[in-house]
Image (cartoon, rainbow over all chains, first blue to last red; front, side, top):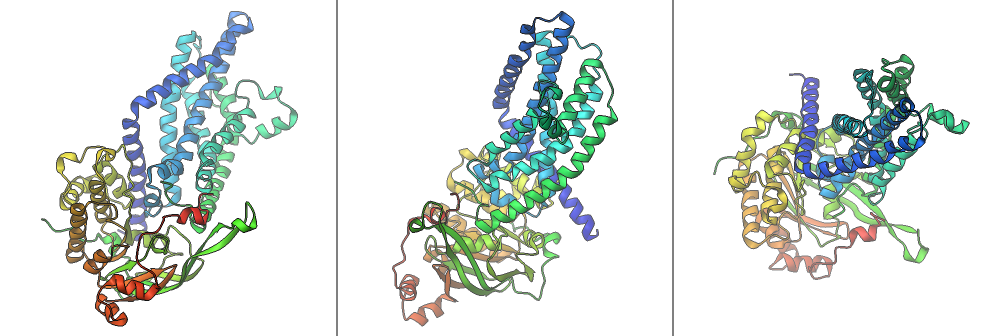
Length: 273
Length: 289
């Protein structure tokens, strides 16, 4: 086998190892995950119930509830991706395995991509459960929903989210104490400009400009059309997501590489006890 | 007891046969530590390693002695590609430790004072995860993990138990198994027996001897246990405040200083008694500040 083939094979085995590890951990923390799921459902209900107090005709109330639900589900989905990817470093530092992982012969892009890929898969499963649980509880009627298009668009948007998640995952490397929390700030800022519970047109003009570079804007817009109106994937939503992903992933890797070198130079790539 | 695994081709193929296992020339590393006299945010450079030079031949076991804060762990972390040097160079089997990290990582593994595992995962799961990074497939680890755990004396019935339920000694055996599973040609041991009870310590030391006898591994042992260094190493060095004072066979060290024990040699070389110091490196370096 050529050297390139051996390297490729080893990288793929390593990628499988990351997913395998996360499966082990998810299994061990299953009850905690279940509790977190209950909390997420409760939190989403607090948002979707707002549609009831708007005193709208039933059809419009149903539409508003569906719009809020899509926003809350994407918020939760993004939360999981950012949590997993950002905790690539934070979790390993807490467990004390960070030095072993970072001295292992797996490339950093594959390492990070493995974490992000598992986060997307896990996030999609949780988002699906969350969506149907809340829709059933509230009694939202979405007979024309195009779930295939909604999931496909979310999967495309996930590429950008992974890139941005990788950018934020460097934060715990630079600031072991507070870095992980800063990742959630990035998540919140992204959603606030993306029209998470409202159309972007209600925001000030400068925020609307910022919303154009947020992948969540297109994911929210496209998924709302697919779920509420039964629309298919629109190219107008897809191409910006692909462009943002093409920029975000290499940028994320470059930022992480710079952060890793900084941590190695300053002795921060170590367990914190 | 069955033989240990031979190095796999993926790691042994990148070993340059004509090169020493480790070559270190004028290696320097410094951290920034708080400068209380200069105000709240002031930092000043603090040398962790100062112009360290030595060579380790292939198959050799070398012990570096030093007190806490002497620079032992910094040296290990530099060789493990976890730190970037501030000067000098280090080569492992001919590969530049700071520019050929991928090649180095295939050759090196490490056991540190803390076992460091995912605590909720079992010994077998932790080993499986570590092995994947070195290209070992589930088919390969299915037999290799039970075999290596048996070799380090880990009870078969506890393979599926969460690491958090295991004693320190047991965890350290799993750490040794993790390092050996990937068949490293250079094994970095950073205080591998610190904090272990006498029996566990003896078992780990026996295993290290076995690794040397049966496995084509070079060992760099950093410790503050003089008896352990004398028992395991071909040559012993003293690292004091970042400077390597000497690196010689134990008999030569004793002859050089005209003393009977390594402890006396340490005193003669440094002017201080060998005793544990407060482990305040990180605080002093401001690493987590």
